[in-house]
Amino acid sequence: MEISLKGKTAIVTGAGRGIGRAVARMLAQCGANIVINDIPGSQDALDAQKELEQMGAKTLVCLGDVRSYADAEKMVKETLDKFKSVDILVNNAGITRDGLLMRMSEADWDDVLDINLKGAFNTTKAVIRPMSKQKGGAIVNMASIVGVTGNAGQVNYASSKAGLIGLTKSVAKEYASRNIRVNAVAPGFIKSKMTDVLSEEVKESYFKSIPLGRFGEAEDIAKTVLYLVSDLSLYITGQVIHIDGGLVM
Ligand code: NAP
Image (cartoon, rainbow, N blue to C red; front, side, top):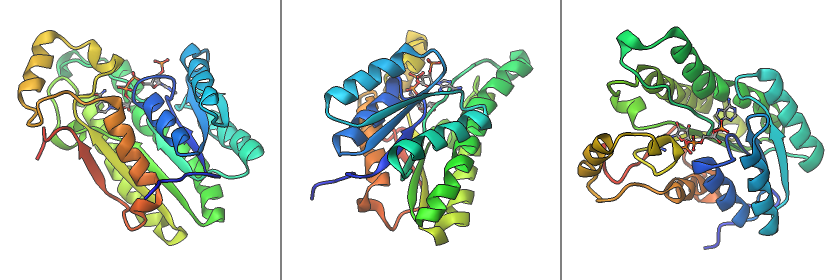
């Protein structure tokens, strides 16, 4: 069975690189129009646009900070002006500011919660009216296994990802009657700029705990996101799918 997203429009936040870029690429391969969001000034977003257009996709770059509700509203307006609908939202933008609780600054807590959790609230709130009017939509939130397990040194990050899971389930309950499905994916250790910065010692310890014996690729996440936004998952909402090579069972 071929998965087609032809005629659908997807907003992907933080789509300039890493997992977001892989998600944008995969949804584009299946025919979706892609709205590429990343922070203002992002060269990565322009590179992503070039790549997707070369593949034949229709794209729109909307640079904006997910922390800002005004930016989110503007992005959705521009999306509707250009593509007439917004069918898919992938809340992917995220950051880490790791440190032990005693040494974690208030700014490090605020930055992570504002981008990872409030960012998803902003974009979700901005798309929910048009999706409700359309009587359909699919939202995927990029959580993390540490939102389920907790992690020493990541009080801010784990809290933001646990919060995203609560947001996912709550919005799923509120909007199921409008045929809007809301799910989360919880990646484990995925090779990206975010994990590149970890020490060899930390990487080694993760590696040993992964039953499937390899780190994840951004494409591993993109494939599951594709499933969750496609007609293959029409009876799935409010779920959190772990994509971690079996790290957390
Ligand atoms: P990444 O390579 O650092 O990519 C994150 C993207 O988000 C970047 O393009 C970044 O832009 C953008 N971004 C950051 N702040 C933003 C803001 N305020 N507004 C809009 N865009 C913003 O990270 P990744 O590994 O691909 O991670 C993507 C998502 O997966 C994140 O939510 C992360 O928490 C989650 N995740 C990753 C892993 C993993 O192992 N990699 C595991 C679990 C969950 P700039 O860099 O240009 O600022």
